[in-house]
Structures are given as C-alpha cells and as structure tokens.
Image (cartoon, rainbow, N blue to C red; front, side, top):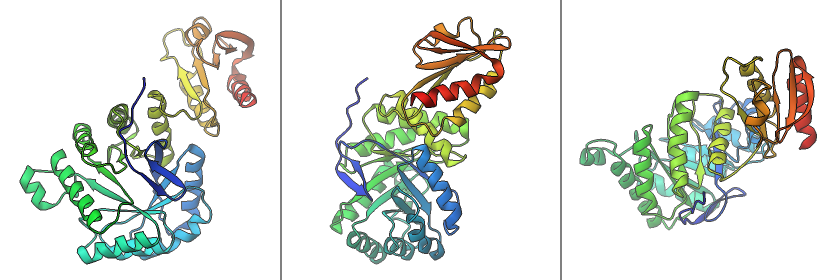
Length: 352
C-alpha cells in the first residue's frame, strides 16, 4: 500500500521538522503536575524511550510555566506548552523556553491578547498549534450549524488561520478534533482541502484502552491512509506510554513507520498448553526498550505454532511442560516451559 501524503508546509517544533515530506511525528501529553519537575521529567524520559517525539505539558498556572526550563534541561524532545484562557501563561511559557504553545485563539482572550501571544511566538521563533475541538466552537457558529458539526469546527479553524495570517504569522499547525470518529474524519477531510498548514490528527477524549484504541485506530488510521496528517496523538485514559504503543501499531499497520518488535500471537484454543495471556503480556513489557523492527511470535502449541508463524523472525511455542524456540518457522531448540520467556528475550536481544 502506497500512501501519498497531502502536501503541507514545513514548520519546526524545536529540532523536529513537521509537515512537508518529513516523517509523521508521534506525540503524547504528560498527566503529571508540570510543576512537579522530577515526576514530569521521569514520565517524559519513559515516553522518550517508548518513541515519543514531541511532548505536551499542561500549563494551568504560572508555577507550571516557570518549571519549563528545568524540565527541558533533562529531556531530549521538543516541549509544547498547553494553554487555555490566560494569554499571560502563553507568553510566560514562550519566555521560559517552550518549543511551541498550544492555544485555542477563541478562548485565549481578546484581539490585543492574541497579538501579544503571536508577537512573543514570532520573537522566539516558536510554533503555535491552533487547537479546535467540538467543545470550543464559537457560539455564533454553533447557532449557524445547529451544534459543533464538522463544518462548524472547520469554519472556526479557518477563522483562526485567517487571524494568524492577518498578524503575519505562518509558523503554525492545526488540530480539529471531536470524540466522534465520523465527525473527526469529516472535519479533517474538509480542512485538508482548504489549508496547507501541517495537521495534527487524533480523536479527542477517545476513552479507555479498548474503546480508545479502536476509535483512534479507525479515525487516525483512515486519515493517514488518505494521506492526511503530519503529527498524531492517540488519546487514552491510560498511562501515556500506552498512547505511544498504540500510535506505533497504527503506523506499523499502514507500513508508514516501523519501530520496535511486532508481536504476533494466536487467539488461543483448546490446544493451548501454556498461560499464553500472561506470557505475551510479560514479553511485551520486557521488549519495550527494543527499537529494531523485528517480528516476534508467541504461539500456544507446538503442533501448529511454527508453521502458522513462519513469517516471524523469531518465536516460541508452548507444549505440555516443554516449548520450542524457532526462527523463520524452523525449530532451533526445545526449552523447558519455565524458561520460555527468558530464552526468547535473550535470543531477541542478542539478535538486535
């Protein structure tokens, strides 16, 4: 499957290029109190290891804005400050070294306040993410369209784009999200036809691990398959590291970007002779530090396991007290069941 990206302009968020023909960027957001520097840095560093390429932090008050420099000293990826309602916080975040700010111009203040934010962003060569979602559409547009429809969100975004251009500012990207998949799809399809600004895609407030993963895979996956999207975030009510894992699985499924092991495993049946659920979960956690693209199979029985997973680079299959290690469908050796995980991990690490 060859995906032709819709052309967008290139902007810089810190050292990361976004848009144009640059690779799609995976983002997440911390759920720590930003002013708790040690906790925030620790979470960002874990996210970096998982593959996060840009991080966003909440800045609800001045204490959080002031913490930005000390956080940035200890991380390696660009930092976006998430601002709502108070333009002074956006200015403070910019002055304290944020690589970008996320604002909704509709709730950041009057025109004079927005001008001040744009001016400081321009002075600091800092990008702005204009964020529109179904809960932030202006009242006149809600009345015009009868609610926060995709058309209402797009018109809101176009207003903000026009405002940025009127202030001679072009260093921005756009997000335009809803928690409803179809409305999100419609909105991004419409906006992609009317701007060359980079688009940050996602389904906002997607939900728990299962429901959020399904909604994100459909919404983000369909947009990416149509060539829409320059950065993405999977929004889950979970540890942000899970957002990164799901994001890379979406990219892998579309052959856009492959990072780390791909685990394939059987759905289990009456022949399953090992605690497959627990083994798969344990292996998945222990392989999070691996960045090499490698296909790992974990199969529930030695009868069909190697054959069904012959495309895997390496794998294990369980038996009655004894399992096997195999590569490319060929058995390498037999293993006591209790050593299956350790030997698989050792074999993967020695191969990467």
